Image 1 (cartoon, rainbow, N blue to C red):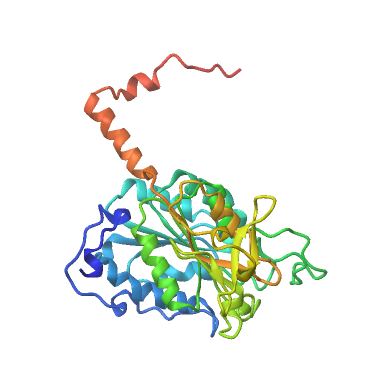
Image 2 (cartoon, rainbow, N blue to C red):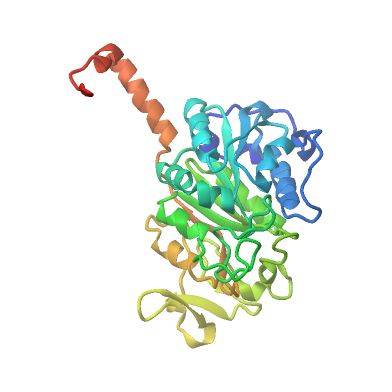
Length: 352
């Protein structure tokens, strides 16, 4: 079985192609203009390398972005693309997905674009479960506007806009998405090509909104923001890699585990100090997002200890766009649609 033979519920209505594609087919003639060393380059290469696996025609793929460094993405993809309005990419992409079921719709956004001015649009796209794949690049800083603190910057962060340290409590994008009842939520790293690509595969196969937070480095204004998670010497002790059906273990010697604490919350324990039955077994397909949410809250925002990555939630719920199309079709079939009566109905208002 090849990659293009795999079932892709989220792409069920998108036309396929038998033409063999490579990453080069998805590269444009535009000069890629990010700062040298920016994590966006790695994400772009991963997406361009992954898309041929889907076996989709390029004209049936569209990337929609907002405003920010990440939002240049559509210029560098040889597909359709929209460089849209600050924070409003999910709203524009929702319209495209609802009206064009033959398109694979991707949103590219950043921690500022998605969680500040775009926070409202993001959570409603998630709760509605529109058939979108949202890639949220998180570098914990405003890069395009030259280094102000963002909604994911840690408390006390010294930046150009917070010279005495940020007073804000930071957002956790995965926790927000799970709280909004998103059906697919994941976290990955820009520098881990294998993990990033596998996460993209699962997101593409999902019907509904798939949010993928990508921890990404801004080497100019916030260099090393995720360094303990990326350094080969330290990553095993910091990262909790979530794998379905497996106990939640981590550490270089796999000697740290996740268990339920005395208050019912999740806690980190020494593997040798607990019984095997106490160790949490991970299941991204659990209907209740409670454990996934608790796992997303383990990370220390300053030290980055106990940061979980992987697919936190992957459950099935009919996508909003499919429900809309079914509703419209049912009205057309019944013959009850009467726009004139609706407009001239009895509900009127007199404005004095």
